[in-house]
Amino acid sequence: MLRTLDLSHADQFGTDSHASNHFTLLGGGGYVQSLDSLPCAAGVGSFVQGGAGGVFRNFDNAFGTRDDFAAKFGIAKISFGMGCQVTERLALGGTIGVTYARIQQSLFRSTPGVGTDFNDADGMRPHFKIGLQYKLTPTITLGAAYTEKTKLSLSGGNLRFNTGFGITEYQDAKLEGLATPREFAVGAAWKPNDQWLLSAKVNWINWDDALNSSTLTARNPDGPGPAELSVSNRLDWSNQVVIALGTAYELNDKTTLYAGYNYGKNPIPRSHTTPFIAGILEHHYTAGAAYKFTPEWTFTGGFEYSPVVKVNYNNPELPFGNAQLRNEALFLHFMLSRQWQ
Image 1 (cartoon, rainbow, N blue to C red):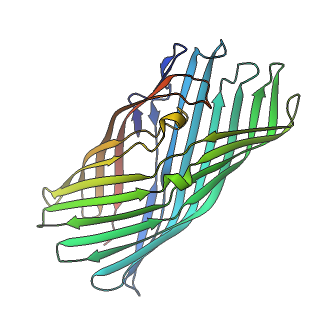
Image 2: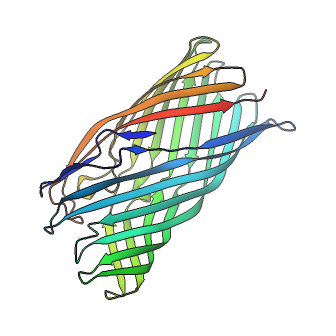
Image 3: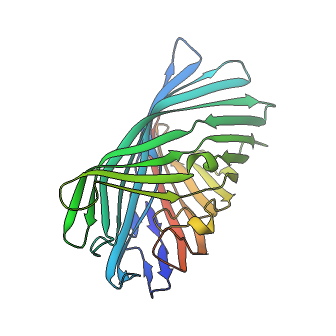
């Protein structure tokens, strides 16, 4: 569960407003089965890959009206994977599956001549990932993983345009140019004794190739207005290096404690910052615990806190002028697992 502590937009027209959606619930699940005839395990998992969005209501804007703007963008995937112990030290694995994305976006939809409301566009694309683990010593394990870029072309939507003389609906609307990024990660885990585990990871995220620009196109209007609408926005995200540290401590046979930290510099340039994608968080602090009720059942819970980040910007493609975007978030994580011996 995500609790947005401060997802806010302020601009030169007198707005300083928190998004009206304070809570977001996310879910997932998975199943893994060892294979008796091979030193392998196979499984399936479904989970949220990413997303963003805020709903901002009823504030003054550059067109002399009071209106709303909102964006809800979600990405989920289903993956089928297999991992095998190739040698006593080396394990290899991979997943394939499908990534699904959906978007809703509106900008001053009640304002004549400029208002738009874009809904119900979605898309599905295949994805894959490979990885390995190598046991360097009895106490040190190394790992690496590669994730391929997945293009997300979102089509089948509709766009409502406030022409000033009424609402014209375009039945064929699509958004192109978005993608989940290519990633490469390396890490190491050290288990100095039976109770402690320490880990570190460096993850390179190729945002520069994934989010350069987006184009919204709408055709087939049912009323007065242009035969085609097309709007392009520069994104120009920068590549990101994320450094992560973690530790686990086995308190007793039933309880394990966890803590972690990771940092990645905000990849969004100031001149292309937008409240539609508020991916500006940089620091993440985590803590949690797992409790084994029985040999089969385990409950794991924890929290993740991202302190507030403020970005002052002026995006020439948006009607906000001199503006500020703020983001601060608290995530609560819960997991229930069942193991068959």
